[in-house]
Length: 464
Image (tube, rainbow, N blue to C red; front, side, top):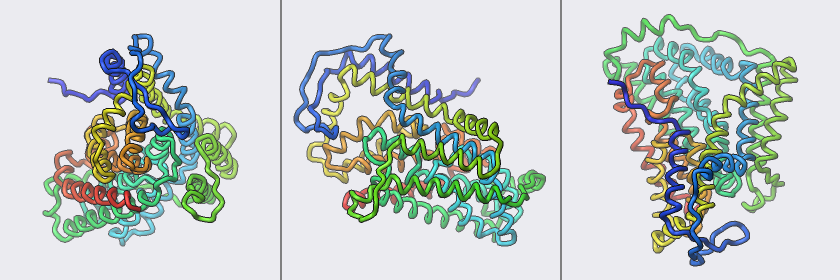
């Protein structure tokens, strides 16, 4: 009997477009009056003439969605191009290799240092699929040091995962969600930094505690029955022993500067009452930043013109699927708006939330996003799909829109540490030879702790 496979995010989202088109013939059409800043005016909902969507509208919806989200899609492609050029230099791979070599003999220190490094990648540029390349490098070192493969997988998967869960300026989660919520990427960065720090510290403690027990008593390992087999298998895999070249060091400096400029450019210092010049950049300026950054990086690292262009195009191509996700997801909103049912659903939410406090609304939002994140593991797709509804609902509940984004990325981040629909999770476990059920046995306590902590921190965010 063949295994049942989850459909791709594209199929799921296009199916939702069809369902929403059908609902435009069933749900009453209605509209709100809106303020100049796009916030719906409570109590202004009124019914309008029904406008059911036809098959032709369904086909056109993803294209119209891509037109509406073209600034975000272009930004994603520019980030992809920039990452493609940095990948061409080999700087990131070699940098991690150098950290490992430097700490040889002090392998326990690899856990906090590498988890922080991967978390930095996760919180800034959404490092996820890129981590797959590091498993063959990290696992042999960790196993040879007397730990098990679960420890090695945890260093990478939980490190980057904690970063994505606590995304500060991650363009694929926070950036896209902020764009469709109509707020700055820097709004709410303080609570996201707090979540990042807390989740990362707890994850490091959890991994180091487990690793110490395995080191002192190998039978404690959840994969103890595979210990000898894993030792033999990973002993034949050698890590990258190359030193960082002058150009690679320069590439890492430019890489860091580019992301620091992005962070500075999106933080609304003036709105926060901080007397620092505010750039207030949005997606066009940020897209230009990564384009210019890629060109400068390529020239200063002495790549040939063809190498710069080819690596930039290849990097952008790697994220073309994300751009398509944005179009298809936005197509759902197009169908709902054209069929005049978006505001009707908002009205239902307004009525349901009447009397609910801001903390209750935020915690409910977090819980709702958990099953949605399992169904749609693509953070970009889920953000594009949900923010046009959830962000205005926050206005009715008296919750700032940035907190809805934080609850979304926190829920998505925690689910993407365990979901079998994620190629990153299943791929990393496969390389580490860790059965999925044993990974769940290992991580469920940490997931519960992170769940409780993020709930508490989101509640704290309502009073900050």
